Image (cartoon, rainbow, N blue to C red; front, side):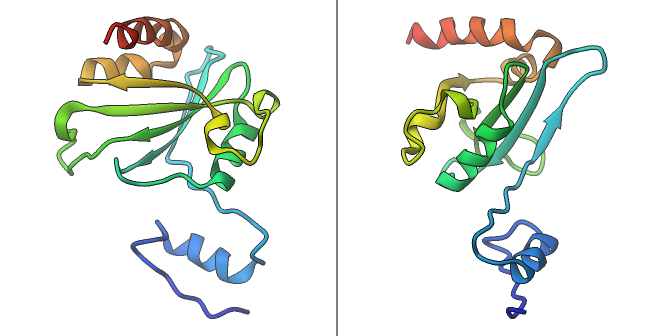
Length: 148
């Protein structure tokens, strides 16, 4: 067994660090911050939240694309948020990850991104992540985003 070393700035929890020390290097550990669903609604949302300066690895994008499908949407959400829930500059960037079957160049990070959204207030964030109206709101916010 490799020496267990928890790097708080790199690994988001101690159990992920433990699994990393027990398994070989050919595996990817992805952090899924949220899985949103509502009984009776087909739409599901999975997202990974990152600080605005964080990067997403190619391996993580591959993993998220394996989870995305017609009714399950996977996103990388970037913003800087404080412990009181205030989003710095009121800017949330949301990258939609393509389902694996839509990715042509699996070695190119950009090819995993299906769409991009900018949310500028709590109302937009709320509406975007309501699974029961998600598909319709995505189209609304996309039209709004293209005006600028």
